[in-house]
Amino acid sequence: MRALRAQGYTFEAIRLALASSGVHVSNATVQREVARATKASSSAQSAGSGVRPDELPPVLTESQVYASPPSTNAPQSPQVVSVVTDMRSGKEIAEAFASSRITNPLARARLNAKDSS
Image 1 (cartoon, rainbow, N blue to C red):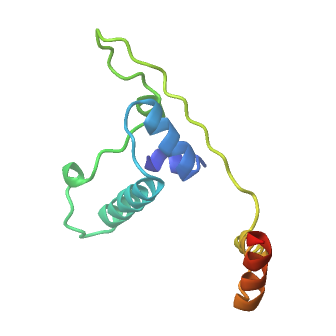
Image 2 (cartoon, rainbow, N blue to C red):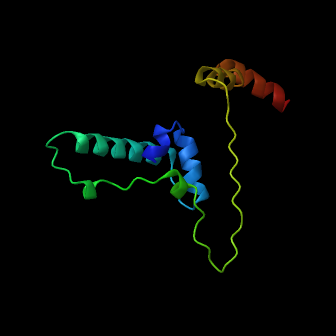
């Protein structure tokens, strides 16, 4: 993961690569593990850190991340990943939500009275 991140891959791209190989994790998990691996690597390189190389977490190469999962005799259904992203800002989403709501209790009562008659 650290190697992919160093090559410029986004956390989401790394997460999708892991998911395609059968390892399903959240984006936060990828961020945490990349930070942990980076911190362990930098602390091991500093002199007198006391961390042995065999204590560092394994770093997957790009070929390992994109490698096919081990085949099994049972047929596997293809996993379809669809991501729908709302490109609006948080402020725009909040404004759209608030504009569709009547917050004034008097106006709400008048509207409800009009609908019931």
